[in-house]
Structure formats: structure tokens, C-alpha cells
Amino acid sequence: MSSFSELSSSPKLRVNDDVLDRGRPKCYSLHHGILLLTVLVLVFFGMPIRQLDDQEVVTMSRYVVFLKLFLETAEQHFMVGHKVIYYVFTDRPADVQQVALGAGRRLVVLTVRNYTRWQDVSMHRMEMISHFSEQRFLHEVDYLVCGDVDMKFSDHVGVEILSTLFGTLHPGFYSRGRESFTYERRPKSQAYIPRDEGDFYYAGGFFGGSVVEVHHLTKVCHKAMVEDQANGIEAVWHDESHLNKYLLYHKPTKVLSPEYVWDQKLLGWPSIMKKLRYVAVPKNHQAIRN
Image (cartoon, rainbow, N blue to C red; front, side, top):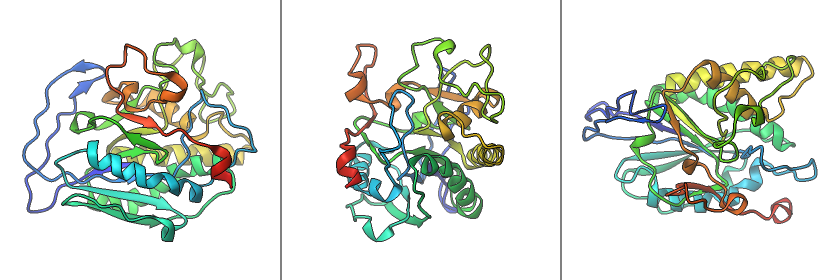
């Protein structure tokens, strides 16, 4: 997850809320300033096009192996020229490797608890983001960009993504109609979306916005998941299902194309995609489990 902030003695980063308002290109102004980025990593990447069974248990601690590549590629492509803070969430802080970071860029490790099932790791990230937003991020930064660690940056990702609230089109559904979206369809769940509603299907692996907006999003989603748990139901795609419910009724001010979250191994590189900016790292799940 990422976040941006202004130091008290520095000029402010100004980004118009309508930079790319739901796909319509508009202009933004970037005054010389300080950009602080917070990256939330070490969470399971929930893509409905990827089916895992209960035997493929990938815990947060095992995903630490992806952190080095994530950070190295972020240093090459992510918010280059701006000051960046990477906030890494992990239950094993001693296993976090040190990576050479550029001037004005640093790593902060935040210790959190682990969960046995990957589904629980995925769902509790909303709780983690909400908690740390309230306890820390609201006082330190202006924007958050939330991303998963089992990914790498392969092309430029910069201030063009910033907006009050942004979501990213899921790579498995960006060209399909809503009848094929894997929304939660059971009315008992707080993530329920009727079949005649919905516009986009958003990926859970890349979203963000101002700290205030992301805090509200994650707090609402976490509360909904707690209510589901009390009612004995678990949304079909966990936190991603709740994210899609939230963004349906709280429209994002910017929608990013799936070039910002892609799986080349599963989907190749179609001609419609001019760039692949943030891509999944091929994984050997057996090796991770062992």
C-alpha cells in the first residue's frame, strides 16, 4: 500500500482529483515537493482467475521471499524522483532483507500477527490498513497506495495514479460484461451485489487514495467482514469481494487500466496492452510451502 505526505517545511504535492476521471484524460500539476510512499506488502494476491485449493496454504511469513525483488524493481520504476517510505507488514521482521534504497527512500517494518489460512491473511489486511491508518498514517502521510508483495514493477508507475480514491481494473475481467464478474452473489453476505448492478470488477492487489478515503474504505470493509463472520459466511473472494462492493457504491475518482496489475504467465501480453507496469511474479507454490 502506498502513501504520500508533505513534510512541514516542504512545498505541497498538488494533484487534481480529476486527473484521469474514470478514464477521461485530464491534466494534473505537480509542484516541486516531497512524496512519501507507504507500501503494504506481504499479503495474498486474490485473483479470481487463479484457483487455489486448501492444500496451497501460503502464509504471510513465506511471502517475505518476494520482498527483495519487489523493492529492487520499485526503486527502478515506482515514483522515481520522489521520497518514498515502504511500510512492510510482516509477522517475521527478522527475515526482512535489507535492500539498497535511493536517497530519501526508506523501509519501515511493521510487525503484525500471522494467520494459518491464506484467506484469513487476505481478509485481515483490511483490518491492518485501517488500524495503522488510524494509529500512524493519518499523522504521517497524505496518500496511500496499496499493493501486494508477490509482484514486481516492470515499467513506470508515477503520480499519474494519484487521486482521492482509485481502483484498478482486474486483468481477468476488464474486457468482459458484468454478468461474468465474480461478485459475491449471496444476499446473506455484506459483500452481496445483485446481478443487475455493477460496472467494473476491481483487483484487490492495487488500490489507494488519500489516507482519509483509504481509512474509510478499509474500516467499512473490515466491519462488513466481521459481520459476515458472525453470520457464518465468507465472501467468495474475501477482501476483494468487499472492495468491489465498496467501490460500486463509493465511486473511485480514478480507474486504472489492468496494465497496473497483470499476470503475464496466465494472460500473456495482448496487443491492447502497450505497457505492463506492475506484474505478478511466477511462483512455485510447493517451494513456498516447503
